[in-house]
Length: 144
Image (cartoon, rainbow, N blue to C red; front, side, top):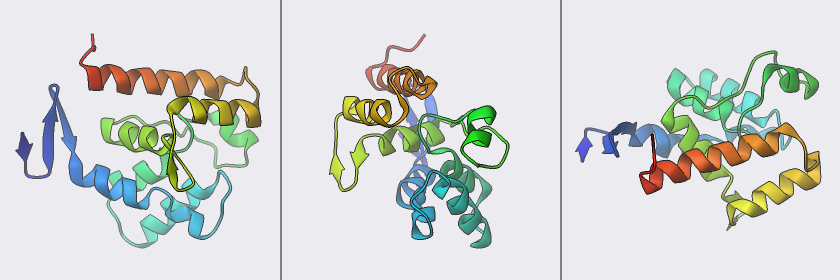
């Protein structure tokens, strides 16, 4: 059911225009850098363009499955957390993990890639699986 740009999915109101815009623009920062800070750079570009704050946030938090403050500082990012909080933010972040370069990949391939780069016991691996499980539960209707 659509209400304007809103879609009701399994009892959750989802802004489809925000998801579509986020899907298209989440990597806009890669126009200037291909490092982890592309999310921060992308958010800055989006702000300069006068894009809505909700879209800026989608762009800023799509990296990994979230980055806590301490890891952000270690990575040279501004001191704050980078976690998807809204359903729209989570959908864009999760969809981003299903693409590598120009090809669609199984989620496990993304986990393997993160494990190779960061180590199998890096906390980001657990965060990836948490996001994956949350999205699968939503899709399959297995929510609490």
